[in-house]
Length: 453
Image (tube, rainbow, N blue to C red; front, top):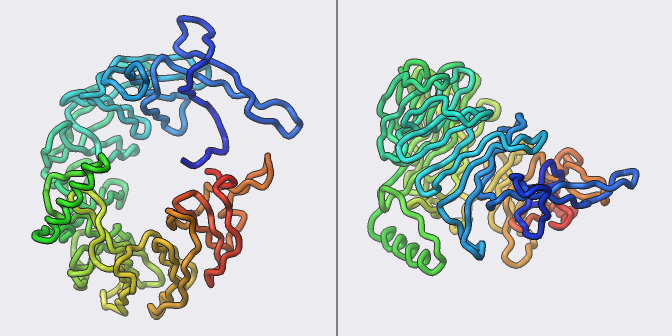
């Protein structure tokens, strides 16, 4: 876990907290956690509810904090199904409302300003201020547009592929139509004020008020037999040993062999699948399609620079619900206007996958387990590569942007991306940050004790 720099409210689960009043919802205790610039104590108040906090939800702007509380066994080592949810007023720490729930057949979701509580086959929209039921229906929501006040989703606790649009002001159904979700949604994006794009087996465009739209079909999954089945069996055996097994509804199938949806200046959509990269107009017309090498293409990322579409094949996908190295890493460039291929270059690390990437001017940085390589976008050729010295069990993770801080002193913390914009800041799996030049020379390494989020 990364350390948090600022504390607004600390909800403590530890024992040994003194009660203010026996009937209070919280047991409280004040603790000095630091000093101000002028030497005064900084005091935090710990609030301990009657049961352990299982999850918490905050909408990011209101004074409401929703707690999911769950009972445990006598030793406190495992959760029971009994518990409650409680809405806390962050101003005065009072309980606005609470209700008992059974975690075996219920789920609580805070989606933007909307609070949903699903139980058995019903989904209730609750008033965050009172906990009263505003309305009920039978849909879990995959996407919500707060401007139109419309949510789209599928029936609760059902394998149905009937997608419904719901008026969030009253819970009424606006329309229902079949949209296959067997392999999940890969992406969702509002193309205009009223049109939702869903990356699901290609692209599904939906006019939210009416359900009208168009479909572009693409191959984003692949059945596997023989060797892959043996691999799956080994994975199940490993799960037995480690206690973790992942299953999916379509056995022996590789999924998510698709890119993000790239929206260009003309509101056209570029999408790469396992055998094709295409540009589709916002009316559904296919403007061009260019074949991709199907045997090596898997999960990919696309981005646009100067009328050139760049595609990075990551070298992985998902097999039977779990991460799997599928295909080979490569990157390619295509003309935005006609789809003609400028180049397609294989990357030597065939037993690796691309963990992260970034683009600086004409340079593409690719991140592997313990190595970073840079390529020229114009020509597609390798510029330089370097193996990064890591600690035992450590791996390279991602380039950081804003929100990661480095300690300068006991009271001064700097946002690293803002303070050092000329550096390439790489976070590792052990929360160290390595600062690199464009030529991949190491400038400084920040230990995890000095890195905060």
